[in-house]
Length: 141
Image (cartoon, rainbow, N blue to C red; front, top):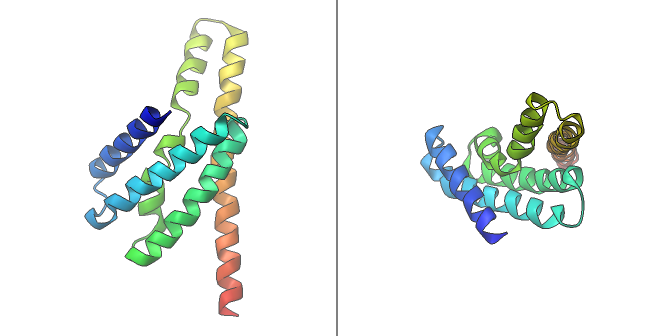
């Protein structure tokens, strides 16, 4: 598990460099990747893809929002590269592989895993964004 998290961190850093993220934010993008990968890997052993991706995205969104304000960069500069460890790449690959092989049973299993991971990521982003906006609204008023 530690090795998987390390690979996620390295891949995220390479992606952020390739996408020309600001140099001052690279270390925090890497920390965000470590947070998202760690929370997702730990929780996936206890819960399914949906819950582990949802909670990981909520944690990551709060971290990225905080760091973006400190560094004075847009939140998406921090958030987008840091979500790379959450993307369901292997389940998408296997879903398409089994679709081509006409193995409907395996296709449905992997397509369901892909869908639940994607829904968890999206819902986690919506929940954290809504909470942050509510906090900002009540802080101002």
